[in-house]
Length: 196
Image (cartoon, rainbow, N blue to C red; front, side):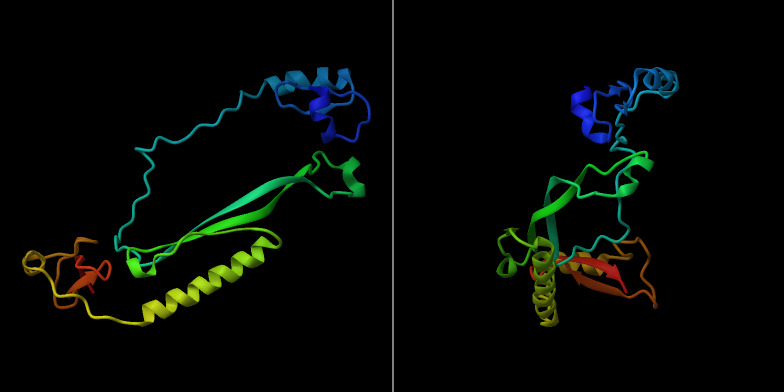
């Protein structure tokens, strides 16, 4: 264990490691003094919330016509931490996460605007990512500026629309101030009934 964590300290000889918190000490006497204090703390374990109790819910349920899904890849590299204050600090930076690449995927139900994911791994990935996202923003902005009329409703959709008395998203009743409108979900024949 001493060899495994010896890089966490500036001590050049063998260290004495607490099996409870994995902190290295320079002498057995210091470790022996530490152990009773460390054992007073309960063991740590990762506890995840019950998914039934913690489900994210949204009040408005209109689908976005476009969104980007992004993921970054990192690698750990030794930190360049040549600070003279290392001896005065309780902890020392060992490794840093460095971005080495990303993937970005434009998601849409509109078939003619669907694209393959963009994957990049190379120099300066954050600048390339920023340029890519700004480019996607410009492309999506141009697409959304091109307004098109909704397709006519089918008979079934028209019957649902005529019979609706409240907004399907928020449950508010329609009245003189809350008008009934058709909210397109995509350029296809889908719609929801909502208020303005």
